[in-house]
Amino acid sequence: MYGFEALTFNIHGGYLEAIVRGHRSGLLTASDYNNLCQCETLDDIKMHLSATEYGPYLQNEPSPLHTTTVVEKCTLKLVDEYKHMLCQATEPLSTFLEYITYGYMIDNVVLIVTGTLHERDVQELLEKCHPLGMFDSIATLAVAQNMRELYRLVLVDTPLAPYFSECITSEDLDDMNIEIMRNTLYKAYLEDFYNFCQKLGGATAEIMSDLLAFEADRRAVNITINSIGTELTRDDRRKLYSNFGLLYPYGHEELAISEDIDQVRAVMEKYPPYQSIFAKISYGESQMLDKAFYEEEVKRLCLAFEQQFHYAVFFAYMRLREQEIRNLMWISECVAQNQKSRIHDSVVFIF
Amino acid sequence: MEDDDRCSSNNPGGIEQEEEDEDGTVLRFLDSLDSYLTLLDALSSTLRQGWFELASARHSMGSSCISSVLLDQKVRSAATTFQVGKSIDGSPSESHPSFAISKWASSRDGKCSFGEMEVSHVQKTSKNSELRHRGSSNFYDTTEEHDLRINASSTIGDGDVQKERSKSLSVFGTLVSPKLRAAQVSFETALDAIVEIANIRSSMLCAFTQLQQEMKEKGLG
Image 1: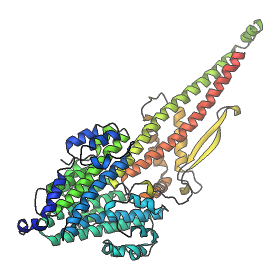
Image 2 (image 1 turned 30 degrees about the vertical axis):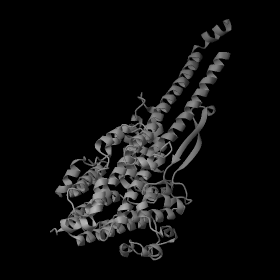
Image 3 (image 1 turned 90 degrees about the vertical axis):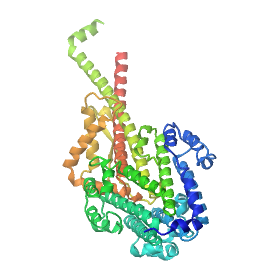
């Protein structure tokens, strides 16, 4: 049930909603992607991007360009836009914007811990961290030997602290424990974000519920497919699924016992919103599943801009920019590897 | 000259035998060269496929999950070892170096590894193959069929091999995308191809050396 957001939203959120809608109009269009797909070298890509909003970020990069450089510079643009919006935001929008970055924080924590386990240099690891997920004491993560120390020494003072209650053990960190920690943290984060949006109410709650439920369901499918043939038990797999979403709880029970992609398909086809996704891929094949999920996500994110006076536009914009950066990374890789015929395997057009 | 004529007329079988041996050497050389070029094509396409699958995996899992900074720098025993030996084709003077790999060596306990069986079967296939078309990877299409048959008969090693594969991928996490596993298989196939190329090259150079020697002797005689 919506309140009278139209009367009061613009007092605190009007400027930033206008800013984010302006940023949205700067997203690359189908004609931009068609030009990029015809490039022969990464320098051609740089030349085409110089006419877009990415121009100032790439213009000073020396040749020969590398695909990781393209991704880094495009990410810097997203970070600058986010930081501008965050410093202008008031409560509760500022908390909402901070929630968007907790996923990156989790990825950075896992990167540092895994790299330290593999005896890599901390500075090298810090350079690879996502800028949106940085926090002050991140370098201290390298000192921890188990999750209890990880929490006690570093994470207790970060926004991730409440998510650790489910996975604190004294077991030493190893590859399996780190993977379970990553997924448990992300599960707790999604549930917390979902509850926060419900408390906000109105259009924000309605639209964000749909977007976060889709995210939770997609994660459940990916966890299932990636864990097929591994040592992860059915119970452990079930524990990694979020406690909300369209698949909760009966779909999760069936996914937990699935042993191949066709069984996953049989579970998902019982849910009408996901029938169209699995209709695009053939039996026994999972290569195009990622693209099908991204296309569905982009469709839902674009629909968020059809309504005004809610915070979901900020979330939608961040995710659409991430998709755009993924597209640019893919196009760059295909051009660099001379695989231009495969470019359309994974590019998802936004407009 | 008359002595030569008398020799040739007295020993026509010996000359024919020499010519047959020479033809055999030429055929062996040409056969090795054909296999070598075919395998080079197959290697190139397999590596291309592997790099593409790695890019797909990075696109699916994210750049932070698949990155060179996650590679393990701890010292550990190698999962795959490489052996150099001597192979003898025919007479002892025709020996040449031969190469073999033992994949997933840590899974073995005194029994033949899955990797060794696979490479030896590939070697037999390369010797018995009919005419092939270059520029396609149908050599390894055939090998995949053999792999399936080996898979069916070597179920003892399968679970161990899968475990070793998962272990080597665990640097990127335990729940990795199927695309990353596909990339691993492609690079493994490429490694087999490289060893096979080394063996065929060795055999080809040996045949070429013999051919040169025979032509030299004929020229002096």
